[in-house]
Amino acid sequence: MAQPTTDTWSIFDVIGPVMVGPSSSHTAGACTLGYMAGLLFGHGLQSATLHLHGSFGEVYEGHCTDVAIIGGLLGLLPHDGRIATAYDLAEAAGISITLKPCHLGAEYHPNTVKFDLQGNDKRMVIVGSSLGGGKIAITEIDKIPVRLTGAYSSLVICFDEGQHSLMDFLKFAMEEGLDPVKTETYSYKNRIILDIEIRQWFESAIIEQITSRFDVKWVRYLNHISHYDQS
Amino acid sequence: MSSRQFFSAAKLLQLIAQHDDLTTIADAVLAAEHELTSRQPTEIRANMAIRLTVMRDAISQSLHNPARTKSTLSGGDAKRMHEHTPEHNFLSPVMHRATQYALAVMETNARMGKIVAAPTAGSAGIVPGGIIALQEEWHMTEDQCVDGLLTSAGIGIIIAHNATFSAAKGGCQAEVGVSTAMCSAALSAMRGLSPERCLNSASLALKNMLGLACDPIAGLVEAPCVKRNAIGVAHAMTSAEMSAAGITSNVPFDEVVEAMNNVAANMHANIRETSKGGLAVTPTGKRITKMIFGKNLGTALAKDTPPTAEPSAQHSCHYSQA
Image 1 (cartoon, one colour):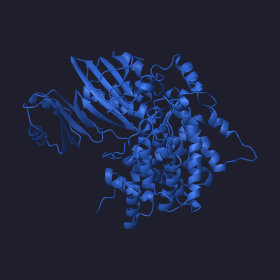
Image 2: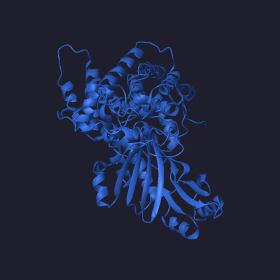
Image 3: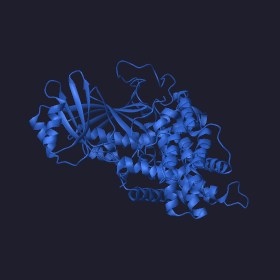
Image 4: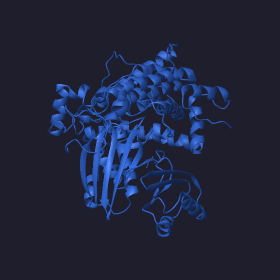
């Protein structure tokens, strides 16, 4: 239990987030998990099955955990009052939602959700946990163990081993004038996810360039999630 | 320049002792945040001041509102306490006001209104209740309140790095327990106590909350959470007053946080935000759960589903769909 966290804590994570109630872990954190999963999936979501593990599965109704996750999937952040109408928004967007309380295993944090997201001829299975006080971590993407917390902005690239190397992407980023701060490489079997921290703003055209120049499975830009912002 | 980050109370006090520009915990917190995020101290203070406004709005939304919440488990108690003005009151004026405000924030939270998690939503009433009541009763400036928030954030950051804010991991000691420690240190700082006395009041507060069960009825952040916040802020004030009187905790703050972790590891999952133990499974708890959901809340009351079974190789779902 006593595992000192390596995550950075801003005072705005402690006195914050500014959020719609009733629970920071089961509402605000759940919403942020949905938001991250939505960014990772990208466009064209048609159906989402939410496997709710542990405490999430036990008490989601009272904490509006399901509502918050769905709101996040639709792009809403924890302080957005529209979260309360997430089911209606999902219906209007033509996204079908299925809820399944489950037990993923004791090694998972008690507040964990496994997203099974489908649409646009693609499927992505994402696991993430709400760590308390609104903090979150995405821990698995299509069985690849990762740790994405939204603590910094990053370019996330998924590709198969042998197709490219870390250096290919770093070289490309530098050529485009980007300044990668640090990288993390995650893998499962021959599939690799590269997380490149980039602190500067850049054109979304870079994402399209990567897709056309390299043989990648997918590329996403994950914006830094800050509890500093409150409106 | 050496790092201004602190992950323990010992390091926090050391930083204050070593740097001439740091006198209070709030100074040290501001310096650490500036170093971490490059945001200017004026910017950081201004953002915290906006949070005070959100807190006041959350109080005023429910202070005069007699309506029960959707679940009918809470609502109207802030007003009840506000209008309760007997000649003899066990609570001092500032404590009486703080309990009303803590109730009000939590009622707003239960209505899906906007609040500031401090450090969590289930404990969102304690820090604002204490700080804003003190401001009004003792005529403190907005700057002093911001110093109070910064002090409480410093206490929170130490706990975040060494323990948890997650009741699913540590029970209610991780939420209301932590917020009483944060509030107690904030109030001590606002009345001008030394950093050591502020940390001491946080130790007194947190020690008395070790092992607190998180056992919400029907899984809602209402019973016992709403009233527990009101009693929590009174608890924080008692701790702060004891520290001001010169009463010292035998165990220093860092070790109290260690104890909190140790206790968390010994707490059964039934009393860690699963609503499978404590108040949630009393006859009344079960009756209310049934009344609210029209059923036994799916799996929540099932007896044969251990919350922490052996790790399974497959990620299969054992529970039926709720």
